[in-house]
Length: 220
Length: 220
DNA sequence: TGAGCTTTACTGGTATGGAAGTATGGTATA
DNA sequence: TATACCATACTTCCATACCAGTAAAGCTCA
Image (cartoon, rainbow over all chains, first blue to last red; front, side):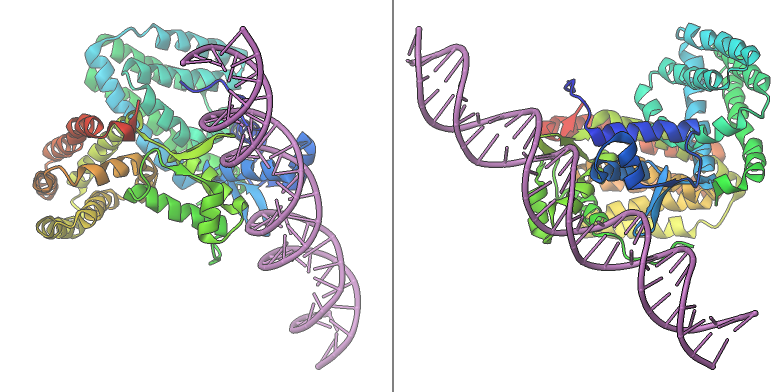
């Protein structure tokens, strides 16, 4: 029963910055200034400052006392850690879904959306649908809360994807998604686990390439 | 090359409160007052306020504008979610460790510590050793960063354990740990996975009992 | 007596000024 | 020319004052 109350100004500023970072509008290493942002949104420094603190708690910014606040670089360690956790968790999702055979039309629908986004060259739309595809599997496994926790961990991965999806082959991603869905529909737990692990290991090859292409954006 | 600089005052206040919450010194639902805490630590409201914001970002406090700040109740959803993630991730740890056969003396050492704490009735010591046991497995699997991410998720679980460990049978926990270690030493991946899953599913029976015993401390 | 309004004492939210620390560019000196 | 020093212009951090919203007590009036 959360009251339908307007978020505080500081919270709104945080949400705005958060989206900007994840969408890649604010690139890694960008300097943020309390004064500048405050002027942009016509507020005092204090709420902006609190937004920075929240952003730092998200692992997306770094506040260096008396020096400045910067958009954090993409931590390869954080990406690899999140990837490992996703593989472990989602493979458990897959086994569970394959065993219970729930309704999977939501996943199938996203697959068609992804094909449409691919031919249309709509990269942000593709990424969002990709997220919804995996989320649908979490919901099919009846683990909505787990997906919420994963969302936080995925933040770093999402930043990476907004860089990499412009480069990498989206049709391969679609094929991997299809393999997962097919195995789930067949109720083959082993095949489903194998498919999702293969899919999520894809990033292990993409990450080093992205880091080599944009060394300034990465750390670790 | 992180500079060896003293943390800001606000950060210190946050760390202090964080430990208090996890140790159970600050119970769920406790009201926090910016003014009171500020007076206690001889500071102005501002750094205390920022500590509250960080605490809320950790999911340990709830800031209700114009109403008050409260230590968050233990979210059963969050506990169950963290438990699910731990089971998935740590079972992957177990399989990996069983396959590579690294040095496991760190885990064995913690097991003896736990026996000593059990007979001495040292509950906090037992819990800390329990954490180190699991952490040692993560390190043996060469996944230190993953363990750091788990630490954040485990926060809610740790609060629960400080309540439940006073009640539940610690010798059972020790036996389960021993089963894990034995399987790992034998290099039996299936048995190790089975043992760690069984161990982590123990909480599924403890949580409802704790929630029934202390309904005021829980939510969801 | 009791329902409804008003007052009042709180809460956190925001604005602003100054303190403390850091980086930078200029200047004096060897 | 190179180097050490120092003034200066930033940055975030903290203190203080004020604003706005909440809730509960007390009052008014039917």
